[in-house]
Structures are given as structure tokens and as C-alpha cells.
Length: 194
Image 1: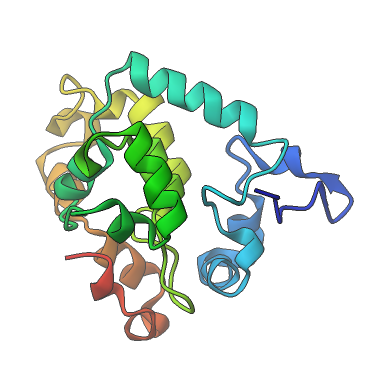
Image 2: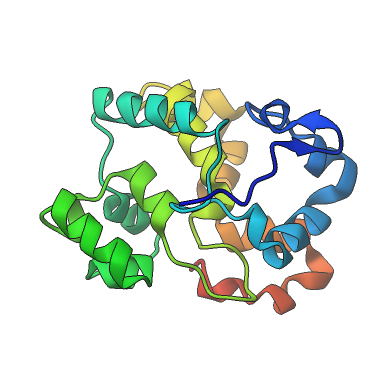
């Protein structure tokens, strides 16, 4: 597949935009960043839209996810209150990609987290897929953050019982609606979160 990502963006190498560079969100705000993600097909992260800068990172992430024995994509969807996919086509919304996955995985429940994040089909004119919105954050958190460790998942890590309850009660819907109050209804968050 050919990448629709430019090699340069505003005279800066595309590779300078990776690895935690939050300039887009900090300068433009969450609302404008989400609008960019919705309206620009070149901004989508998908199985057939990657460039030179992203391929080495994808290989490293796949290796790390296997070394850390991450659960399947469907298991993470279930964990976050999203319905699991029943077929490869339902996951990808593309027959060709679904057939390729059938050759790699015996069951849609065997699809790895990163693979699922990259190949999940989206609805045109809507927010990115339900899991892609947290793509880099999910991958970084699972692979690098000690907060995902059972040893750290306790009240004193988050400043006490009250803040820990707040963290545990936060959903994708509450996160977006608290940050995009005037656009919450227009984003139809219920399609993506319970």
C-alpha cells in the first residue's frame, strides 16, 4: 500500500511529529485536533496508510507486544466496554484485508492488539475508530507505563481514594464530553463508549 502521509509537514520532517510530540494538541486544542482527525483521510492511522517513519516503530511495537504477552484486540475491546468483533470483515470492513488476516490468524479473537488497532475499519465522516482515538496512548500505556501494573493500580498511586475513584469511573465518553462540552452531542460518543 502507498502511504498518504507526507514525508515533510510544515517544513519539518514527519518523523519529528512522533514519539510523544503533543504540539498539535497543545497549540490547536483537543477540539481542533479531533476535527482534523475526522476531516483528513491522510491523518488516519490504518493498515494501508503508513510511511517510512512508522514502519520501524510498528515492528518494534509488535515485537514488544509479543514479548509482553499482550492480550488480543478483542479482549481489550471487551475490557474497555466495547463489543468484540465476530468476524475479520466486521473488524476491517474490507474483504481483501479480512482474507489476509484469515491466513495469519485462526480466529478474529486471536488478532493482536496493535494489528487490531491498525486495521479496525472506521465510519466515514465520523470520529476515528473507537480504539484509534487512544492509539498511541493505549500502546504507550500498556507497554511502558507502570500504571498498568497491578502493583501500581491502587489509591496511593493516584493521590488517595477519591482521586482513584475518579480515575476508575472515567470513560471515553466522560473524557471527551468534559473536554469538548459544546461538541459532545455532535460527536455521537455513544457509538464508541458505554
